[in-house]
Image (tube, rainbow over all chains, first blue to last red; front, side, top):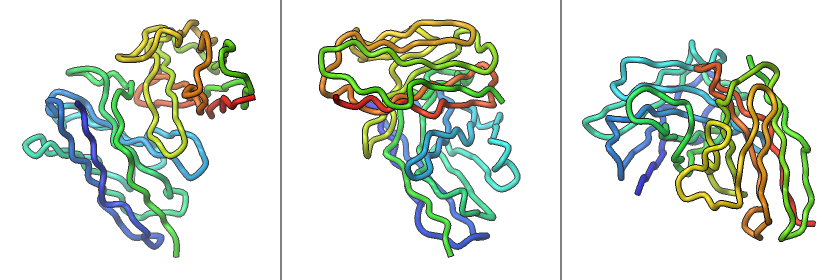
Length: 122
Length: 108
């Protein structure tokens, strides 16, 4: 059974940094693309970033691409999101999400963690 | 950016009734559309992908249809656990992935 556990969220001041982690289990992590999807309080879903199974191909949403970095450690079955220069509008629940397809990223979101809340406030 | 517009914003129905939710894209997405269900305090769950394929473990009362710019999620007979928020999502313009704003399905 797929299990995704996010950590690293919290309250942070504008301009500061946070690093989110996602521990994966129950599947062969190194064979799947992985995503971060966020949801501001009371709002809809917003895709943030994707990383290919081998970590070589990455894409981020335009509004975060100069501030966020996505990475993964396949030896430790862990996904990361480094978030710098945080802004109030980055406040959201951040979900770690497994892609549906083995190999090339399919951009459908099959399995979700429970999320970690990031609050950017002074 | 492809904009997905869901309608209605809120749908009020009774258990046992048929629910029809709509998602319209600002430009064609072929059949590259998915539907998700989200209950309060929970992560979303994938229901349908590629417009009409049910994800693993999804009951047969959920069905998807459409292509191009107009899509429908149908729940044939509502169960109490189906009342939730539903989102559509397109992957046609990857990596510029977008979601609809959601439809809230509430008990009448």
